[in-house]
Length: 104
Image (tube, rainbow, N blue to C red; front, side, top):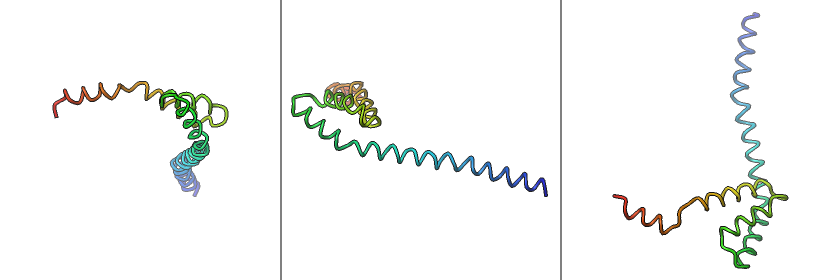
């Protein structure tokens, strides 16, 4: 009886250890997505204002990422990452040249 109880308790703890992290991660990701979506209207408004003021899209994304840092931190972080990725990419003309040279 005692060994079967230990075996059952161990099995329960293993199952709990397999299921709980997944549940915790789902809850955290849903909360983060809600906070990001909540900040989209402000980000869109700021992007429109920046682009209409004459900024390029990459500069506008950078500016909006900086401005949203206090109110919508998660969205600000994502916009900053987007800006870094845009700066890292090669210009479209260089990509076209590379595609022309590579054999199909």
